[in-house]
Length: 315
Ligand SMILES: [Zn+2]
Image (cartoon, rainbow, N blue to C red; front, side, top):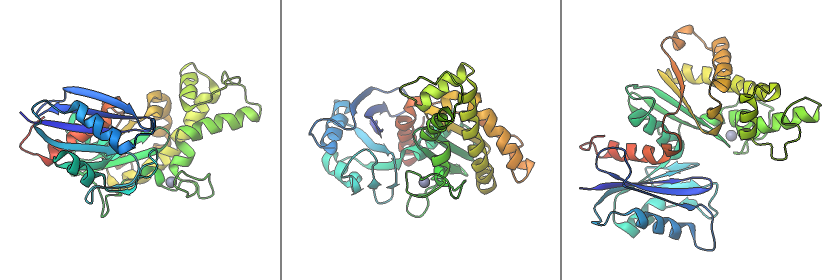
């Protein structure tokens, strides 16, 4: 029996898993840190993949989920935010040379969308929009049961929509993108600014003011933390109204650390969306929910891609 190997390159960890030909129960999962020691990232990646390789060596494919822009057709990583030197990096060819196994690359948010569609919250939906909100905002779109890739595989960068033309500078260098006003760092920055202006909050003495800390304070009812999430939700709802007009999905799924705040974020999103949507018809039957696959979205998204490319195999 053949196995699928999937790899998720994250900001702090690289994880690899081997899955059987059918089913989503991993046979083996291993991890390493994204940046460690003097060894090259590629060498550590090869070592990690080798550590989950089945004994019989029968691997059907290797799939790699990577953050940032990637050209899946060419098999090239345009840039990897956490791995210096991986610019226009031909990872697919290098892995195929190392393992002699068909290898596929995908943007991690795109693959997470595919994972939710095949194994998670969006099963049965042909039109899906996925937004991951953490340090940045990533996106994935499925239209008519197909992942939207675009001409160079660069489609669905949903975090880089302009919502505030003169707003703060985004990680991509442009101004006022959704990511720059609504992702985790923007939530933490808003709280810091308000505290400096004299706002009262349980976060007042916090030394490490992260979006996670804001989320926890919001769960305890802290008014400033709730305001910070509501502000983020307001912008996300604004962008979502645009996305609905373009893609008309039947389900919108939120993943990433900030989405763990659940309704504290989603209620403001719904409110903002309701005020701005072009026509109420877009909201009829629309499901807005959080991701089901959690930390495994990259690995299972890679598995979903592997299944899609190997259609005789069933989940
Ligand atoms: Zn941007």
